Every structure is written in C-alpha cells, then in structure tokens.
Length: 86
Length: 325
Image 1 (cartoon, rainbow over the protein chains, first blue to last red):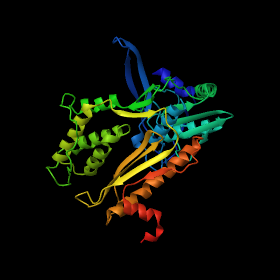
Image 2: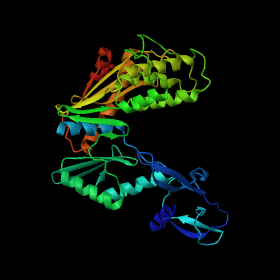
Image 3: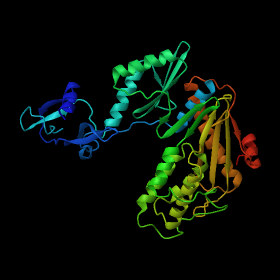
Image 4: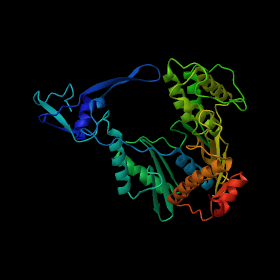
C-alpha cells in the first residue's frame, strides 16, 4: 500500500492544497487484490488507489471522456495486407 | 480529491489537487489517449484521418503502422529496426509490456501460416457458451429454418430482459470474425427493448449453431492482389413489422474478406430496385472510406473498386442517369 502511495508521489500526481470554498472533493479508496502464483501461494498483496469517479459531474469535473477505439475493419485490413506482404 | 486514507501530511481541511489522471476518474481514458497520441506524433507518426486510432510513419523505405485500442497496441511494419526503435521509445515513455508476435489480442486469436493469417474467436465463443450454460447442448447445422420470420410481438415477454441484452451484446462482438452469424445477430438485436421467449429461443439456436464450429473464423490469404471488390444484395420489404428491406454487403481486398454488414434499411422502399440502388450507394461510401484507409497505409489503389449487384433495374439506373426519377 505504501508502495502505491510512494509511486503516485514520485510521479507528482497531486499537490496538497486547501479546498476552495464551495467545492466538494472526490472521494477515493484503496482496492485490494491478492495475487496468487500458479501453485496457490501468495505472490504479493496489491493495493491500488482509485478515485470514485461516479461522484463526478459532467461539465463541472470533466468535459470529455471519449477515447477512440480502432474499427475492427481496420484491424482486418492491416492484417490482410500483412498477409499479402508476408 | 480527498486525501487518501493513509496520507498523514497536512491538516484536516486540506485536499489533494490532481495534476495527473488517476485510475477510476471519468476522464481517465480520454487523458490517456491524448497523452499517448501526442507522444506518438512527437516521435514522427502521423494520425490517419480515416481512422483516428491508426498511426503511420514513413521513413525512407520503412513503413510502420500502429493500431491503438485504448491500452492494447498492435504494431506492423516492414522494417524490423524501425519497429525496434519504436519499442524502445515506448519503453522510455511508458511502462509497456511486450507480448511478442501477434497471437491473441482483443479476443481475436491470430494464427499465421504460409497460406495466410487466420482469425478466430474460439475462446470467446466457448466462453459465451459456458456462461449461457449451453456448452453441452446439441450442435445445430443450420441456425434458422428457411423463410423463418420473427416479429415484435410473438411469444411472451421475458421477465429478465438483461440476460438477453448481455447475450446479444456478446454475440455482436463475435461477429468480428464470423460473417455467417451477422444476419442472425442483426435480426435478434432489433428486439432489444422487449425481448420475448421466442426471441430468446432463437438466440439459443444461434448458440447451438456456434457450438457446431466454435473455431470458425476468416482466413486472410497471402496470395492475393490488392483490389477492392464489393458485393451487395437486398431483399424487399422482408421485415414483417415495418416492411423495410434487409440488405447486406461484403467487401473483399483481393481474396480476403475485410468488411461486411447486414442491416435493415432506414426507409421503406417501394420497389426492389429502389432498395438495391439505395444500398449500392451506402456500399459505395464504405468503399470510399476503405480507399482513404489504403491511402493512409501507403498502398496505391489506382484501379477503380468494383461493385457487384444483381438487380438489373438498379444497374440500369446507376449506369444511365436518365432513369433517375
């Protein structure tokens, strides 16, 4: 858990400031996951800090959420050309 | 953002101001994409206008193309050194995991041989069968009887439409490598708002049909020239609820099938010629898009793309504008 916090601070993910008046803060929490090796022994305990995105409001906290995905036709075109060109 | 539970610095009223995106934020995917595309463009890639998630780079004789599906990336190129330099650049910028030669991506299983590249979704198909509990059902050779028609009101409405929604959603993803179930999924997905028991039974028949050959996919053969060919066909007023026509097209690049669609038209046609002519127009727009895409992939396609249609009246209209009403 402290590893995750350390990594986020290393990356300068945030700065600590005072909350401006009239604004509300987004909650966050840790999500824990236990990673097992193939034989069932514990590999490591993983913690990830996640923001509770469902408390955000459109237009106030964010404006765009779109991330384009590739058309599957494009994938097939690329692969067919790869097949032709060898 | 409120401070994380363990962070102990600062007073109680202080919060963390986010400078970077965090997992779970609504805009996380958008920010990732803008960061990734900007760094690729800085490296010398150009973003394709035909498909925004395709990036290409031309450098003397080497050509590299890169496809982005949120955080899954496919790289193709003709020069191994430029691919290696791209990889080292990405390693420097991000923490990436390299999975080697393309075998399994986005649920597609890719197999290569001297004959070409074979795509299938065997694991995905079996997962659907397992989740719907039809793994042990009897396989069917044909999913539908001839002239079988579904209507909106046949059968009793389902008490839990969500399971139907989920099933159709997964079947939709399965059409990526299976043009044979494209028509069926098109029919079934029309009844998403009020699915009935008969619709669900038909969906289960489709699953039994998938069971007969889960490995079925498409082969992109290596021995083919670069020539776009499109085939389109339409029936007339076959939808019993709306009397609109159902049409389909498939487009080949040489011998490999790359694009297909089955769709109910958006307007009522008064004759089969009208329906076919209308659909030839929309097939043309797909062909035009494909030509732009080929251009972005640095492939010359100087010859005209061929469009095949079997309706004489529609062909006459297309050939001679005098027949335009």
